[in-house]
Amino acid sequence: MAGAEPPRDGSVLRRLAAEGVSPWLEGIGRTGLAAGDLDRLITVSGVRGLLCDVDSVLADLDRTDVYDPELERGVASAVHGEARGDRYDGPGELLEELVAGDARRACDILLPWYTAGDGADGLVVVPLAPWHADAGASAKTEAVRRLAHRVRRPNALVAVEATPEGLTAALRCLGEGLSVYCGPVFGVEAYEAVLDAWLAGLGLAHAAGLDLGRIAFVSGLHVTALGPAAVQVARLLYDRADARYDDPRWPALVAAGARPHRLMWSGFDPATAAGTVPRLVGWGTGVALSGAALDAVAHGALLRGDTLSGTGPRARRDLDLAAAAPALAGAADRHSRACVAVWSRARALLELRIKPGRVPVPEG
Image 1 (tube, rainbow, N blue to C red):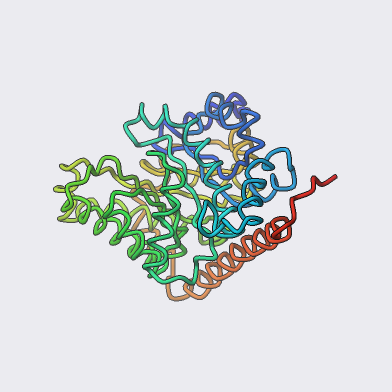
Image 2 (image 1 turned 90 degrees about the horizontal axis):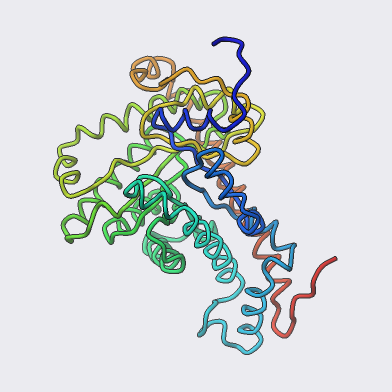
């Protein structure tokens, strides 16, 4: 009813799930996992997936009671010259292991939902370090394999960028039976390429006799990076995703157990999330929300049903791709630079704390 106070018991997010939109949490560190924050959000708000990030790990690195044991193991390897031949290949490897460790814990928490939903929910996306951003397709493929091996969970997906090299790596890894998150995407042509890589990768896996039902694939749009154009682009992407199920390759793949991929909206500004999320409701999608954005949606969003399906033609009229292309490219470039800056800061922090012969000293 118009004007009614939004429910405050998590029912807004449960209604989203009933509309086919899977609510995910975007970012949580070991402190939050240990405190039971993810468990609570699963129970109270119906959260069914997680996008891991590096900022949460960096925040917890300042709390030596959280990461000291793993840091000390890394330091011991470095001091004894065993880092390259033993567990870690320098600070970058160690940081990726910290991310993988958090992902393993989150995967275990969400595993019952992965099992109950036969692989449709309970997924955890683990980021590939942006210092692999300039690597070629073969190097990216190996990095995805290595990170997937580190996490060792059936409900984990490794994230790669939606660049030509990243798409090639995604295709190869899908073909090997690995689950992948490819994105974020910043425009329609990029998303079309992502869909091509997804179908081609599943085709390779099918030809190799792999179980397609165990291969998850998620891609998505970074909402805030696109600003006012985000909803129009999202509508068009949703329309393109729906059209791909008419691809002549799809019937054979679905007969072999392939699942539809999930189109994920992420990067919401908490200040505007309650108004934006209801405009992005469509079956088979997901919304990845930070803790603050999730709270804003749960307490302030007024849902009005499916707002994406059947809007493709209008979206095409509304979205002037030629005019929007420079803005989208600029948004993608800014996002890429921000990611690289975060990981560069992380590596610098670890270099300081893991110099050979130096054991980290608790801060404060």
